[in-house]
Length: 279
Ligand SMILES: [Zn+2]
Image (cartoon, rainbow, N blue to C red; front, top):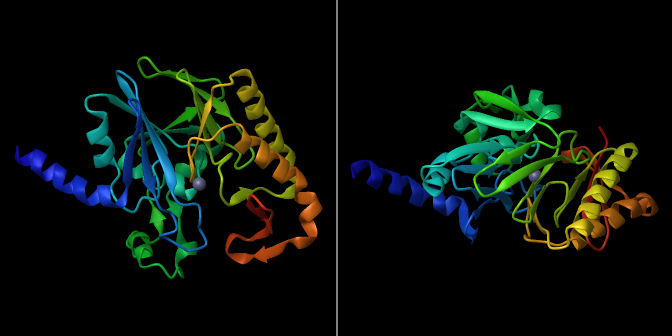
């Protein structure tokens, strides 16, 4: 009893920070605002998804690592086993990894999450909360064990199967997840918000990935899209909007402005803001 009381006290604090909502019987969304670390990040909220199979739960991403996430997850999954996947190795998706014993990520980004993650570029952030990173000398520890995901891998959660689709472009090891229950988790490959794109010469990779997902939605008409940022669920229009927007960037190239915080070019159209890497 004492332990239970203690846990619910922890929960009340974290629940205020993470916004938890039950979207379906087997699907929870845990939201975290990422703008709390720097106003340049505008893609609030980050959506972490928790799928509940009959015997296994799957957590998709671990967030910013500012407050304990595991107690929140543990209360939702009950007695189920837990699998933890990172959709890719960008900071807002992985900094809670340390709390979990074992994390899966695509083979192309294993190295990035196998060592402490350097957040020192936030040293001059105007946001007070960055002190939480400073306490760790801006080096956020990794998970103890890292496992590899490959395109086509299938995981059985009990009455829900999840298939890994490798979708490079936003980053080399980005993955999307397709469930047997009709959800497509699109990670940062597509969402309605500021887009972080690789160098222009790598746009073809992004476009190939988006075409692949569009094709999948054409085959499976009732798929619902669950992006890792902002609005969910979305439909195929998100993918076609983004595909057309990125194709059109060449026509807007002269409107680009430098955005030094991301070391990127910034271009806006009427649907998206694009940050195009200059590195
Ligand atoms: Zn992100």
